[in-house]
Amino acid sequence: MTHPRLYPRTALLVLTALNLLNYIDRSVLFAVQPLVQSEFHLNDAQIGRVTTLFFVFYTVAAPLMGPLADRYSRRMVIVLGAFAWSGVTLLTAVTHSYLALLIRHTLVGVGEASFVTVSPTFVVDLFPEQRRGRVLGVFYLAIPVGTALGYLIGGYFGTRFGWRAPFYIAGAPGFLLAFIMMFIPEPKRGQFDSLRDTPERATVLGLARNPAFWTATLGMAAMTFSLGGLQVWMPTFLSRVRGYSLDSANKIFGAIIAFDGIIASLAGGWLGDRLLKRKKSAYYLVSAVSLAMGVPAMMMALFTSGSAMLPALLVAAFLVLLNTAPLNAAIINSVGAHIRATAIAVNLFVIHFLGDALSPWVIGKISDRSSLQSGFISAVVAIALSSAILFYGMRFAPPLRIGEPSTASGAG
Image (cartoon, rainbow, N blue to C red; front, top):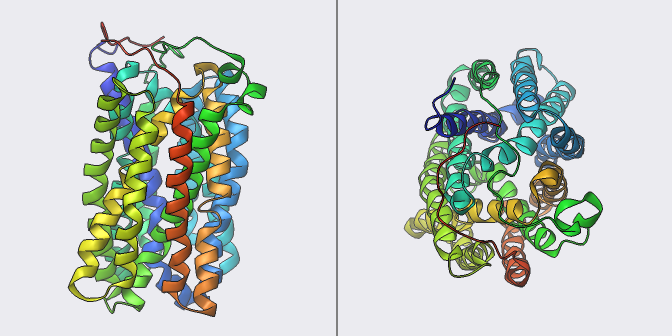
């Protein structure tokens, strides 16, 4: 029996580690894109289509996983999904054509959708409501750190042993973590929620009339369009436009994402939780302000050369990533516990269908016709749009009843 004080932290650690592998696998391709393009003779639009196809199937699979997890064991959905995507990742060994690469990414997208849909609902039921920003800040550290490690692993091993080698490194640990997850007790759904269920918060049909959910979701979709495009194309931009070697470009951008992401994820969660005691819209406010400040910083990073470029990129990435924990907390708090996985599935479908399922291809298409810098303008516009939507969404934030926790609950 897991010790009651260690249980929530152990579960959070395992889920965060799985999330880390999820994002490592996803970003390894970005690090080795020029190598893949060279082997398969692909243009920018074609290589961008690989990521687009991944997210298309990812978004299609997510709505199927949400209702499944709301009715059955979330733990088993997570375990089966982790085994599936880890196994498919190792199939990179037999990927020797552009078509095989597309199929491989399609299958990984379906496997990862199960984990990303279900795991946040598991995490938030482990800790009291007033700590959600900080807890999600830890859980979503996996996004910048995993992305950075993907660049670093891909850049180092891909340039030395071929572009397939990093995928083997990214896929193998998933089997061990999935096995450990089989023995993590599942917490009771909604055990720390303070708000009463209403039709908008507690039913699938009511979700369509939930403005708190939809403004947070649409704001996240615009942000995801921008971030997804930048993650896919920034190493290529630094290599092709700014003159860095591919290995150096991946190290630079990976280090920026890791450094900014760790600080920004924790700081955003802490700031959102702290302001929530005084302002119900704190999660929306932190996200909206950070994204608004990120617009001029990103413009400077993309269109300034010389010594000012990398510091501007460092600041811009920090401001964009600062919203990660508070914005996900806003999504979680906008709905009741018993439709939360379904709501996250809808959220994932929308943010990826309108976001990073489109942006890699859009930026690649503009790049083929004009320049990569011109393609990035669409990402900057999306950041500004995200900020505007979230400022508007502040009025719909639910009034949580924040109090001090008594004890951390164990498994249900």
